Structures are given as C-alpha cells and as structure tokens.
Length: 465
Image 1 (cartoon, rainbow, N blue to C red):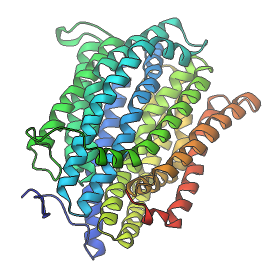
Image 2 (cartoon, one colour; image 1 turned 90 degrees about the vertical axis):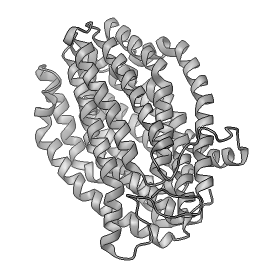
Image 3 (cartoon, rainbow, N blue to C red; image 1 turned 120 degrees about the horizontal axis):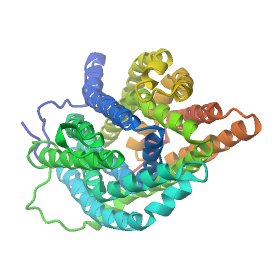
Image 4 (cartoon, rainbow, N blue to C red; image 1 turned 60 degrees about the vertical axis):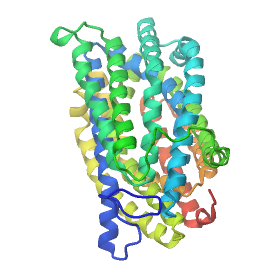
C-alpha cells in the first residue's frame, strides 16, 4: 500500500519509531543494503570500465582521469541541491507531510533544468582549456587530446545524469534506497556491456576506444534516467511525480532548498577546487605515476562503499527523526549505524591490503603501475574504518541540515590538509606518489576528528530547515 497525504505506511518501509534494538538494526540494514549493493556494484562496474580502457594503454587511463575532475565540477551544483532535497524530504516524511515532500522534488527538478542549461553551456566552451590546465606540462599530447574528447561527450550526456541524481536524492530522503539501487545498477550494467562492444569493436560494433567508453557511459545514464522516472511516476513510492501537477516555482520551498543547498554548494566548490589542485600535483609526477594513481583511486572506491551506504542511512534516519521531533532517536540510530559501518569497513580493508596487487593487475600488465597502485591501497586500507566512520558523521550532520559546517570541514581537509601536505611530502621529503596518498588519508583523519567533535556537540538538533 502506498503512502497517502495523511501519512501511513508503504510496503517495504518501516516506521522509525520502533523501540527494540533488533527492529532498529533491521531498519538500518533495510536502508543500507540497497545503497551498499548500489555503491559496490557501481565500484565494480567502474573498475570493469577502467580495466577495459586500460587495455588500450596507460594513456587511456590517464585520459579518463583528466576528464573526471571537470565532470565532478559540473556535478557540484546538483550534488549540493541533492543534499537539500534529501534533508528536506526526510524531514517532511518524519513530520508526515507528503505534500511538502512531493513539492520538494518538483522544485528540485525545476531548478535542475535551469542549472543544467547553464552548466553544460559553460562547459562546452571550457572543456579544452580546463583539461589542458589540469594536465599541466607532464602528460603526453595524446593523453590530453583523448581526455578532451572523452569529456566533451560527457557534457552532452550530462542532463540525464543530473536529473537521475535529483530523483534519487528525493527517494533516499524518503527511505527508498532500493529504487536508486535499481536504476543506478541498470545504468552501470548497460555502460559496461556497451564498453565491451564499443571500446574494442566486439560483436560487429565499431572500434571507438576512449570515445566508445564515453558514449557507453552516456547511454547507460539515459537508461538510468528512464528507470528513475518510472520509480517516481509509477513506482508507488512515498515521493512521486504527477505529470498533471502545476509545474511552477514555489519560491518559499526554493528558499528552503537553497538554505541547505547553497552552503552545500560552497562545500562542493571548495572540494572541487581542492581536488583540481590535488590532481595537478599528481599529474606533475608523470604518466606512469598518474596512471597508478588513477588505478588506485578506481579500486579505492570499494573502500568507500561502506561509508557511503551507511551514510545514506544516517542521513535519512537523522532527517526523519528530527522531523518527528526525536533527536534522542537520531543519536541512537547514528551510533548503531556507526558501529555496523566499522564491521564491514574492516572486511573491505583486509581485501585492499592483501589483494591490492591482484586487483591492480587487472588493469594493466605494467609492473611499475601495479606495484605503485598496490602500495597506495595498503595506505588506504590502514585507515579505511576511520575514513568510513567520518562519512557516517558527515552524512548525519547533512541530514540535520548542518551544511555550513560541512563546508568548513571540507575547506580544512580538501583545500588545506590534502594539497599542502602533498606538496610538503613530495617537494621537501621526496616521497613521490606515496606522499600524495599519505596526505589523502591524513585529510580523512582530520575530518573524522572535526566531524566527531561537531556531532557530539549536539547543535545539529536545533537546526531549522
């Protein structure tokens, strides 16, 4: 039975106000497993994507790496808006206000269309100078040209990804992590299948190499959008889209989205500027080091699957608990989510520590790249439980609407600790790529401490959204 505007229950959804520890654990797991499966499958598909591209040579891995950061810049506004959408939908669901939850989704989609036109228009003209600036003077011209081509195709496919992201943000806020799992998984599976066909020209398809990888990604994203629309319109979910609704701006709701989204946008801008700076530091080490870095970063996604999945549960439960005027319940859920996160994080850390060489060898047969990437994964594995615990804290604070402080944490970690420590360890202590990754995990440790102090301070319970 679907939700109605007066509240109620839907199939597969459990009310947050359960008293037994067992039922609370079941609720956390019910929210977490689809996100964990989604993130894990996405990581595996991304790894398969990079492995197929890696067969073309180190230049192809580096080319896609060059396009990654500009793509994340494009996503910044939509990720920020997604933070506001998720937090508000979770609050409204906790308060049993379905009409406002649905209005949040509509307003987010209207904003999405406007932002997409602006962002894509700018990036069409900025693609080449931006890619060349990131590449610096150490990467080959072939790598740069392939990176520019890959990115330009991604720009034209960006609207489908941004719309899917917004719908998924609303569904997660309502506690439906399964719909996001299905549409993201479909997109990834189509992407990898078409990669196999288009990169090397299998089954009669043309051999398009890096261009084929980019086209496959765009088509996969379009399939994901179709499934997201189906979930929102016909899926019987708590939040839903009705085509016959009057689609016009509600500026009071837009303002509420902006109250959370603008600080989150500042956070995203800081993060992307920091990541761009960080990337230019790594590219200065040359093609082989950058290729090893990209292989390790690609595999490292596995280490974040746990924190991101449990973080999704923390965001949803925090928002719904505060909407229900139960900050005490929010504290219970965050603590339980944190503890479950540690258990799974340790298991993944063991895989990365002992299986790094094997995993890296799937991407390339270059012994230097394999050895470097495996060493980086050992560094990540050591701090993986704490890195993921940081994501749970940060996600819980976002669910409470504490977006301004998240911008402060990101500024300290990504724009100060990570790049400055990288420069110190590379240029003064001559640690090379090892120094980059020590700086990377140092950022996680610093942010874990700061976010933990903020959460324990309890000011999040007083935030109005």
